[in-house]
Amino acid sequence: MNYMRLLLGAFGLAAATLIMTGSAEPDQSTREHKDFRKQRLWSIENTKTVGNGTMSRTPQGSLVDRITMEGEASSGEGATALKGKFTMILSVFTPEKDMAGQKKGHWYVRGDWTISDPLAPPEQLKYRHTPAVVKGTMNADLRFNPLKAPGQINGYVRLVSGKKGIFAGSEKFEGNLKISP
Image 1 (cartoon, rainbow, N blue to C red):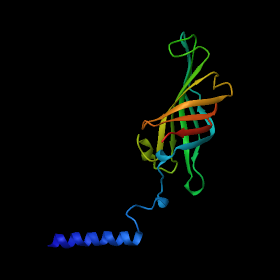
Image 2 (image 1 turned 90 degrees about the horizontal axis):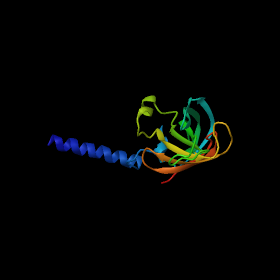
Image 3 (image 1 turned 135 degrees about the vertical axis):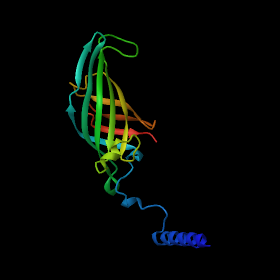
Image 4 (image 1 turned 90 degrees about the vertical axis):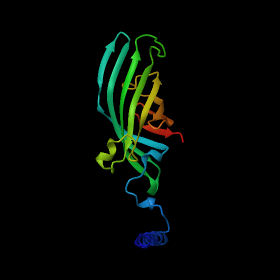
């Protein structure tokens, strides 16, 4: 019988809360951290190279590995706008001669990128799947050396969730990152 009173009391408290707040869902406008993974279009700006990487030459070609870029990312406008930190660690390879799937005179770029919430607690940024971080890879086949010459980059993007998209921007990796629904 006491269990029944306790149970009815708990249901009564829950019902009163619903009536007073009008919803069982938390108010999303008061959330401290938004879900960065739900954004479909990011603008990347003010990038800079914070790590030059290492260069190596082999008979197959030249590789600059672990170049680190950082910049600002924004998505949306007004009160719903999200601002984040963009980081990409990339490699650039150019073959000395035509190889299977790669042509001499082309520059192949591969980067691992993240956009993270600067307000998120540091421990949240360590996880692979967290609302505070969106991450993926980018691949591009270029006809110019993006480390030495200006030019347009159109790259394919893949998120860790499997979603795909494109990056369209400059050799500074400033531009738009669009993720397909």
